[in-house]
Length: 223
Ligand code: AMP
Image (cartoon, rainbow, N blue to C red; front, side):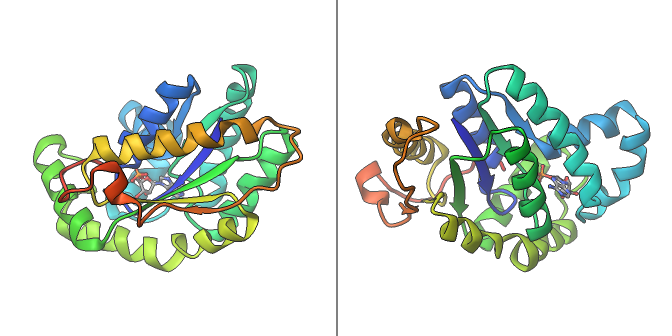
């Protein structure tokens, strides 16, 4: 299973990415976590990117793409599946990540879009700020990250829809319900993802299927 995730900060990428990775036994490649790990270890790369993270700006494409290439090479050696969380963040990254994945013979099967509105993700991120003290979970930086998401990340969604690999999920609901819906959708697709299958892929919009999965009000999850 090869999945990449597109979602605003706070929509639950981290939580759902870990769930999908555990379910399918594939590596969870989270660019934000990898970058924060460099910052924590004060590596050269960490020192170079710290300010971008603190300000909620995107680190330069070539830095993230280098990290992702390395992680995908390792994922290939580990069996070829992956969950990419946090990349692509703009169209250039989407095209470059596609090229890298093509070179390695491991392009994504599914682009998973977690749909959640600004008010809800802001509420979740502020709740997380109280617990985790992430340097980028302040009100100002959250609004900067959301603005960037709307300007440069969300336009990529159409690209994946056109490629026929987009699955959109309503992420306004509690994490468990969202997770159950994601795994059900991915399991249903699994037979068609036999690489080499001649099946034409189709995008799926599950954002209106909430009731079938027991939709209630939103609940806190982390992104
Ligand atoms: P995340 O944990 O995905 O919310 O990412 C936290 C921060 O890491 C972002 O606000 C960016 O500063 C940086 N970052 C993560 N992924 C990328 C990416 N693909 N391109 C550029 N910057 C990124």
